[in-house]
Length: 207
Image (cartoon, one colour):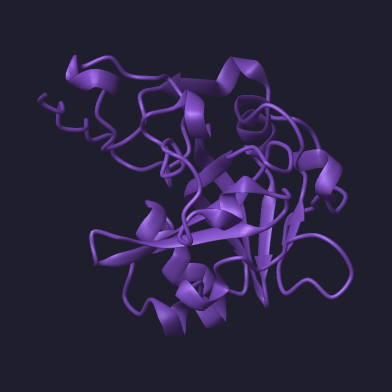
């Protein structure tokens, strides 16, 4: 198991989701015996972001995204697989970071039972695979990553990932606001990491 930094609290997740997303690269998500080092994330920013589930305001589904930070927002994507986000920003503001990909660094025996026959590179290569590897499901929506007794934990990287190996680009599967093809470069990943997912552009929305 690789060394990891200190455990993060709510204050580490408070603020601009783009900055939080950048800081999450190289961080560790802990779910029981499984520990995952994050290699790819995407930022989402509520009313400022047409790609966010919270763009049009709070609903029962998106309530957790409006804070406080430090909780998981878990939702079903296209009725197929679960996706997990870490809520950030400030209380009352809709902000979250999608966990897109990571590298398993502990709990390999448990992961092998959950994902039999899957190559190491592909265990958490994409948000649906990541949740399967961590064992996250819909019932984990709203679960805490911070504080005493939290069912999950988040540890910062021992050292920040150097800017020289961080890449940014359009988010996967998110169309441009207004249907004009504009995209936000709010996906961030560590260059050269085998676990980083394949980019697929979103379909441009028509009027």
